Length: 228
Image (cartoon, rainbow, N blue to C red):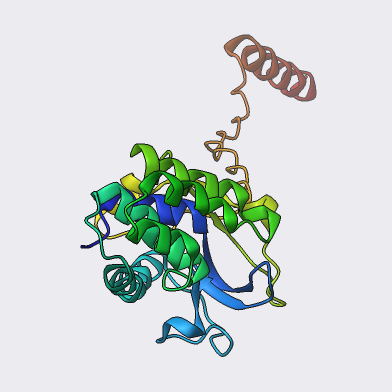
């Protein structure tokens, strides 16, 4: 079996996306959608660059094959698609599908109690809501909303939880060539005011006709007195 698109969306929502390397809750260097050194390929301990969102999704698609194969090998009973998706999400996070009690219970044919045993894996405490969602998916087929958050991380590997961008994962996957949305984008600078058109320089007013007559009359009178 392979993970469905809805299962992939749910897993991305649980993991979140960080496009530069960061340290997870137990201090393991991680990048993208929960990718660690153990998965092979890019080693986040040594990778100092930044992934594009498309690269992060492609890396997940490569990583998840290994986890799908492990679930297929460990589980000996038929599964529905949503049961398989829940188990892949569980194994992607814990790496424990081969040893977990829930797998043994599942292989005995007791799916109800196997579903309840997802809650045996709730350390650290931050993971509890994920286990609850995986349990719900396994027992009822109800997938979580198709949402995930893309977070930035600083150079020390600390995730900046308050500066993420919330995205609809289904829309991203349907888009094909995935563009990375801005993270904590600063507001654009205000546009400069429009240039004012040049104002014409006022021309000096021409002398009016009355003033010209007065001046000519004064000159003529002065010349007449000089001749007398």
